[in-house]
Length: 167
Image (cartoon, rainbow, N blue to C red; front, side, top):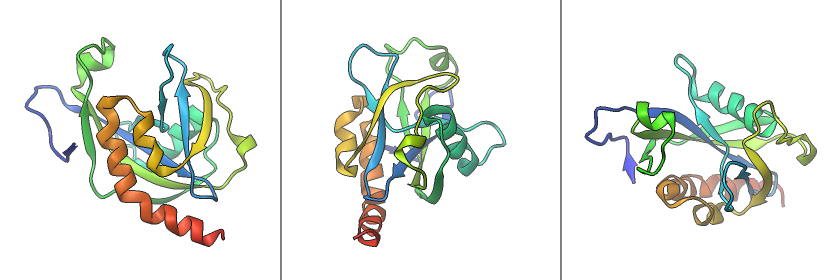
């Protein structure tokens, strides 16, 4: 895991926010990507535009990816986590960036499950579900696993507090 560091490369890391969206039971929303044939689950995430705050980017990306921004920001992890895109990733992004520098944002979902709508302007996911926080590292592609491990480490206490509020 690369915390607040850059690899020796001429390319920068793309600023990005990953949203750990907790429901009232302390479970986390994950969504299955629709651009892969195999099953590929992840947290909602997306780039932070120049001049945009992490908070604004997080809520904007939720709206763009899961059709709702019905959430309250709880906290942002103190450190960012960088990961490199694999060499097999032939996207245009790899031409410009080494990988992504993730800011992890914990949020409380304030809507109803029916508010989640993956049929957005540019759909990225084919399905979604609520899972236990500890499960998320098992669901992600290997090169992003350090980000998800850090999310579990950082937000277990928040998950526990949410559970106790609702018991």
